[in-house]
Amino acid sequence: MREVMTKSMARNTFYGGSLFFILIFLGLSVHSHRYIVNQSTDANTLNESVAAGKRVWEHNACINCHTILGEGAYYAPEVGNVMTRWGVLDDPEAAFETLKGWMESMPTGIEGRRQMPNFHLTDDEIRDLTNFLIWTDKIDAQDWPPNDAG
Image 1 (cartoon, rainbow, N blue to C red):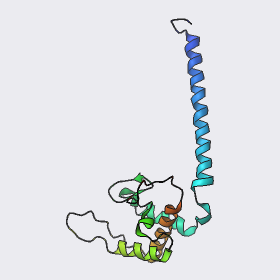
Image 2 (image 1 turned 90 degrees about the horizontal axis):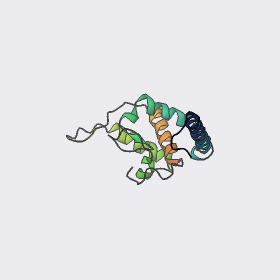
Image 3 (image 1 turned 135 degrees about the vertical axis):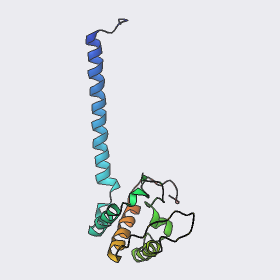
Image 4 (image 1 turned 180 degrees about the horizontal axis):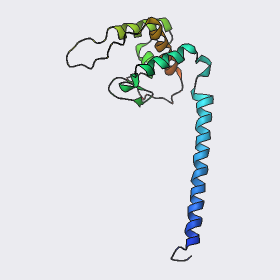
């Protein structure tokens, strides 16, 4: 082996390394796509109400304060497992009533506490948001969040 790298050696190292890492990137991209489509997404329960709930979530910019599955702001609690924390994951009607009561009681006006604004959502919007949060709670998030408190 020479002590000095020639231009052709440098070029071959660059192209070989680039090709190697491009192949790894493509392999991991395909693996991620297959995992998301076939395992982590609960497509059987993904219905119009869940999609409408996600639109409510996006329209009201809930992610500006809350996190969902670790993505978003950290001002307010994680909501990826909120239905499990409230104990209403398997009872959609109780989940709706709990979320509705929570949202309509905000803001509480207690000094020094973080307050959620009242978005004046309709019952249909709250029901759709409830279904979205239930759906989110049931997907395989690989044990995220790491504890029940979110």
